[in-house]
Image 1 (cartoon, helix red, strand yellow):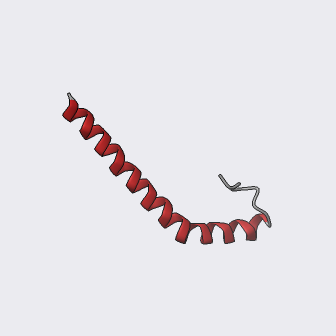
Image 2 (tube, one colour):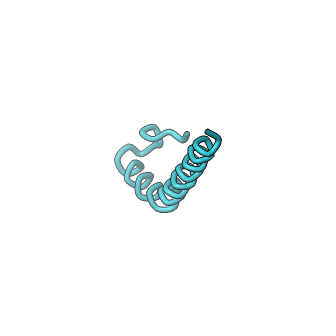
Image 3 (tube, one colour):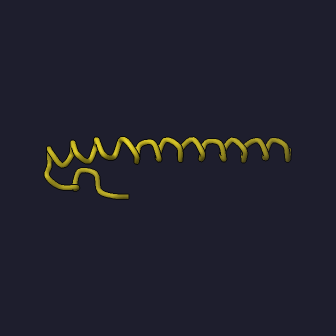
Length: 51
């Protein structure tokens, strides 16, 4: 039982690391593209408010 819980926690940690990796990747590359695109279309940040 403890081993199963450990595996679940480990999986959650791996998922969190993957999420952080993709978030960082998006922040580095995606945000510039998305923000420029949104600014061109809307002229403001209302479409994608900061979380």
